[in-house]
Image (cartoon, rainbow, N blue to C red; front, side, top):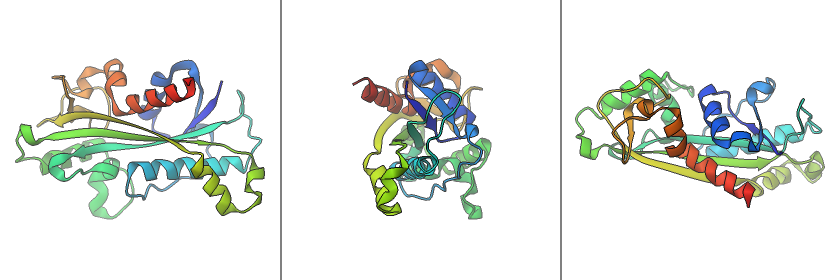
Length: 229
């Protein structure tokens, strides 16, 4: 069984990934490694942010091999970057989804879900429903944790090797943004997002339905298929 580190401390995200991947992998999180560095997500695309997290953390763990947990050694780092793209806002908030409401302060930090939702609704106040098309997008980056010996040439070559061996998996869920929050489940923009073909928001549909429809679920299914093949 492969051991994968999920490169996040977000409990909601970890819960989704654990449920979708099931028992096929041994899953750890950054909470299992308090000393792991925090990677700043300062890139312009989901793929670049995901790869930056996975490669920097894989490099950090590779330098500390043999790293043995109470279960097994660490094989891969899995990082994701995901967010909401709204057509009427030229694709925003995009990579800034988690810190949408905090952007005006100039700080690179996440904002509260309620604040992000409030800002989104305010910007879409005069936009009719038929022009509120949006999508959740997720990109996963899977990077192997390599033996330190590969770093013998140079740190730059080692980083390049990690990038070359990184695999990407993407997923998209199309839908629209409604006019007020509905539902108590989910997190982030879930109370405002109605996926195509449904009348309920992600927050109303519940975890079981969301874990089949979501952008992250679709990306994770591609990852599972890659391992199965």
